[in-house]
Image (cartoon, rainbow, N blue to C red; front, side, top):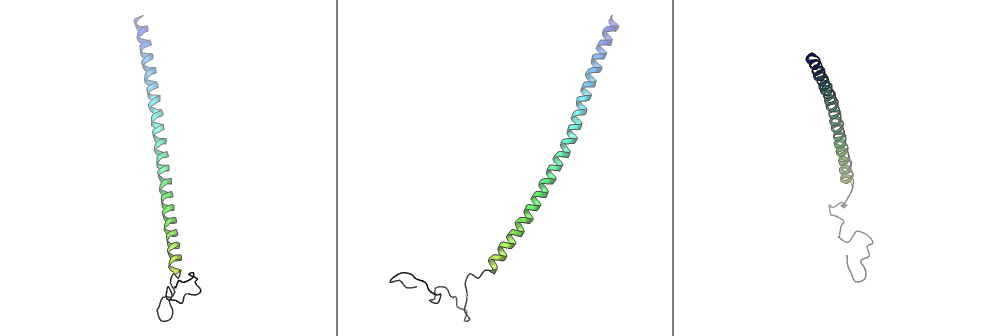
Length: 99
């Protein structure tokens, strides 16, 4: 009987070791997959940040180009600005008001 009990105890121990090894293997596989997934996500985020930075720089360049090409204040041939010097055209300020 004692040898029978020893065999049962050994089988239970072997069964527990196999289950622990199986669980350990599952965790190892999960760890590899998680590492791959995290690396992939970080790579995608880095690419998106780079594309966003390039788009921002391009948009900023286009706006600066537009604003620098716009003539905010015109000058006549003598270098005088035509703002508030009485020659800017038909402006109606109302009765009794001067420009």
